[in-house]
Length: 424
Ligand code: GDP
Ligand code: IMO
Ligand code: MG
Image (cartoon, rainbow, N blue to C red; front, top):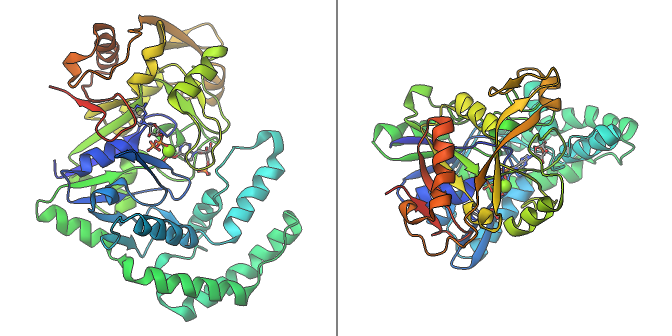
């Protein structure tokens, strides 16, 4: 498959990183098309855990890696991540950073934190990494881009213009200390020296790779229900996570995309605030969190846990045009005797629907209608192929396939890189 999009089908943390790492083995170029250090992708290789924030997961395979125009980059954190990977022996010379990606400047996380503070009980529960304010400045055409790092004069002038406004916000609206121009310009110029060699015309690079018949993976961060336009607004992130975002976020035509692999957990998790119809009420919530290790990669926050939601998953299939599905963390369900799976929502007017509600109030009040599937209550360690799974586990996977009209081509059965079963 020359160009394949890998996209989260739920509220993020589906295990995209691990699936991308797996598919990267047979790819030439791996690209991230959206988001920034709000993403956290954990990959376990030979007992070593890697946590990636900006980089696409192909970096661990030594592949050429693109951070596309649709991403936002925190220069300090990116350098930290580069240093950390290099210190662990991971080569970073294949990294290519789009000059059009926007920079998260020091005022953006401050505004993110201040905004959440002001919202109080109504807060979104962001990662506080400055994502929303950075994308807002981009849309406002006030953003500072990676390519501005290449010219110290332009960089300084842009910081000066931005600070004249941002410092008023920081002081008057959020009661923070103002930022100092000289100190900031010097710090960014230092970062610029380090990052300059990685800056490239990444749209051209991807286009050339595709023309040469090379295999390209386009990795989405976060998940479909966190998409700015189609997710559970306002409890979303500020970028387009859906597969369509791959074309704009990288700068390739949508006709170049051959396949879209949706990654879904065998259950559902969500970090931060917002509606979640299948969230478990009772001790199984904590049990699932502990069994699945459901604590945020970026913030360490507890992830909220719920049963598999096929209404939301069908919506994700529609929005992304999945050509196949990867179902991760099936092993976590091995500990439950009964597995409720949500097949419809009951709406406040008493009606039932299998379609994702178009109106926020319907979704906020939707109650899940479950079908109970049998658990298998034994470990999945022994299985090396999908066909070798216990019959109840195969039935669970088959139920998902039938409900969505899609093949599940990959099934995750553990944290380690090799713990993925492929269709026979
Ligand atoms: P991402 O953001 O979608 O890449 O997912 P995260 O890395 O934030 O969260 C997924 C977590 O589940 C990580 O800790 C992974 O190591 C782990 N994981 C991924 N696939 C599996 C699986 O099949 N089984 C188990 N038990 N853990 C998995
Ligand atoms: P990966 O790529 C899970 C959530 C935050 C919050 C909302 C907005 O690891 O799957 P933001 O900081 O983006 O403005 O926060 O989006 N969120 C994620 N949740 N996984 C992620 O990324 C997320 N990225 C953002 O928790 O609710
Ligand atoms: Mg994650």
